[in-house]
Length: 189
Image (tube, rainbow, N blue to C red; front, side):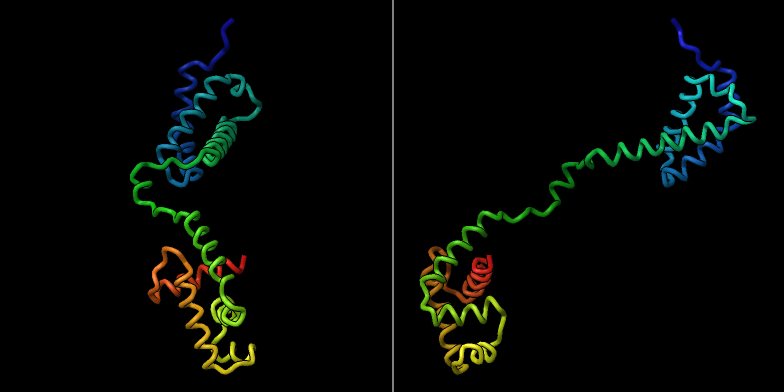
């Protein structure tokens, strides 16, 4: 059994008569992508070749049928492109920034949490107010009911004790501020 197809002469006449308008229509649907528009135009004409019954329709021109088929093909093509993940070349992967290892930060947070537990309640209270809640020395002094000098002294000695109690961490001031940030994330969770 053979399937009926449109003869070549009719198809060539269809291409001559409606091809430029079809391509222009598809250029609009593909946002000016000429290659995709040409592919969709070719696919539309292939459908016309496969469906000779469309030529027997009661309308005067094949243009509405062609444009409907072309629009549906363009929609299907766009949907299939969106369903596929974007292809990435090796160049893009090499230039992408490496993500920070979250395991290291989790271990640091656990270390800091354990070190904060070793502090006296007075030292811990000062660090919580200054580093975790972001209060100033004056605000911390007012909340805790102690002089500002005492707040400064307790925060200094608390940070110093933390730097000693944190294994593998430097006792420099940058490490102290890093430790206090990690402490903030550790106690806030």
